[in-house]
Image (cartoon, rainbow, N blue to C red; front, side):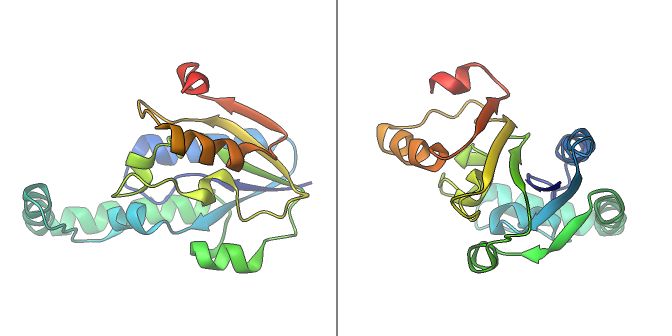
Length: 183
């Protein structure tokens, strides 16, 4: 069985990388797992050698990265080496690539196990990223959420309707926190 996993994997956060690896290992008991190398533009900025945003925090980040450039370069190389060696990544894909390709060769599509459903984590403007809801998979595909999280985010009524529509064709949904089910 071929399994596609969509999760947060391209950041310099040990917890995110380890959860991606652990989820891949857990799913490997059921078949061959590929982690979709989805390049969310907001999350991907975390992997730049020098990060900058037009804010006070962004200027602090820029100064920090410049002062620590040799260390940051080594850190990024270590994370890249680990993900390339251990996550069985697909080709790098943008959201457009995913919607155009439809990745039909997988039997099951899994999203999770991280704060993939927290708009504050995946977007600078608190926008839901439909890729993390497997919206690119064909309608007949088996979709599963494994320990997906919204963190402490509270959705408004409009976002709740959008999420209900995105989750409508999932075969199984599990969340990391029980209060995420209520929100």
